Image (cartoon, rainbow, N blue to C red; front, side, top):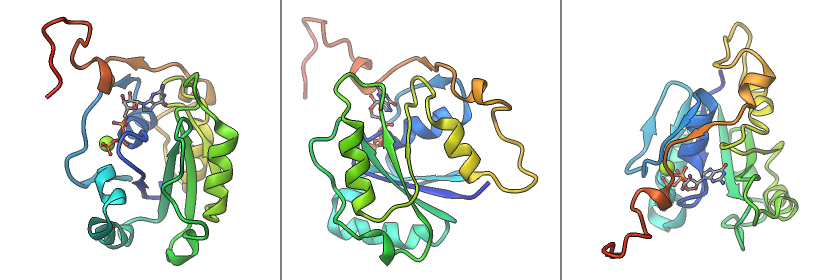
Length: 178
Ligand SMILES: Nc1nc2c(ncn2[C@@H]2O[C@H](COP(=O)(O)OP(=O)(O)OP(=O)(O)O)[C@@H](O)[C@H]2O)c(=O)[nH]1
Ligand SMILES: [Mg+2]
């Protein structure tokens, strides 16, 4: 598999996508530092959001074959400046996440990612599995065995064990945001 570094603002769905690419269970975990897995480098969103930390992303991208810019389909704006992809000396792809969300505006997110010159742009849902197969096919190299054998398996509904918002039961009257 091509090694892919996931870049995008906090909560755009990087870690969830990493889980959906590999398994059936989705479980919320906040990315605290750059996690270097076999074929995915998962980064904390704060690195993309903070000027000084963003420089570290440039260094980590040297460890990857492909740089993936993620944009959540519910975003009201894009973090990325137009034409940013050609400054990277790796292929840059775009990934629109959370296309299952009722608030999603997929067309707008695709436009914003295309403006960066990322190519191709994939549209995925880590919850329903939609689009995951196409991304795997893109990352696949000769001789690779994919974690999912068929498109149907790759694009089957995931078991969402927890999300950021149900880690604490906010209906609990004693729950306080701190
Ligand atoms: N509906 C829907 N929600 C998603 C999807 N992907 C992620 N989410 C939700 O979005 C929230 C943030 O997802 P993460 O994967 O943790 O986001 P992240 O980009 O890794 O965030 P940081 O680690 O803070 O940089 C979680 O509550 C996820 O359950 C998706 O495909 N569909
Ligand atoms: Mg994360």
